[in-house]
Length: 265
View (tube, rainbow, N blue to C red):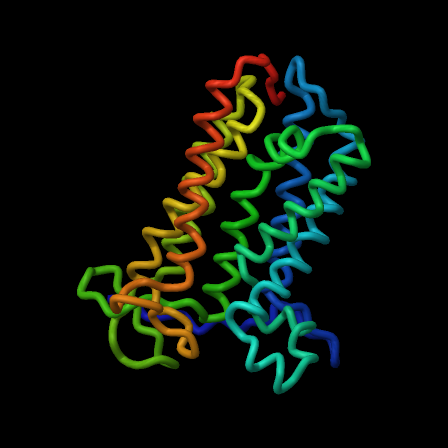
């Protein structure tokens, strides 16, 4: 049995100025994305240039942060927003919806594609492999903040979160760090290392993330103010992830059956 290490969420404090680990995780995510994007531009035959990566990630960051925070507020904390509208700006306290962030990124990538003369899927196919390490960093931020813990377990790696109770629980944020961060990145990076039909990489991204998130939701305690939506096991995460699995599979099937020969590279 393990015990939560009770990490101080503030990484650096100088007078009234504080830098939170959660914010640093976002910085790590964007730096990792830029670095991976730069590596992809060096592949023979790629249609992307290193100078474009900074602009791409600026659009991505704007869409992810605005969409993630707005999505969390609307789907998970709307009552709190009605009580205190300023809460929407307190990102350092945690509370970012992945699914809301994804919608924000979709809008941002559509705008970026229009700006650069690329199709939406040409942009998302290039971007997708750059994202998983950032997702992993975000889950580590959840762990440091002591949020999104799992249900009770008798497995040897069960972790006691003293601020919750004395029961060993699934460290579900660490499961997501491994699955949505490390494993997800490895599969998607290898898959995208060769030219693929346009839409295929985006489809693989949606399919894999949906599978990993759907699975972890079985051992993750749902938000207390939402609870289970049905059957004592269906969570908001299940409801939002299942369409990703279906749509991702449909994108891949369509990509490989199309006959126009378009590829993303």
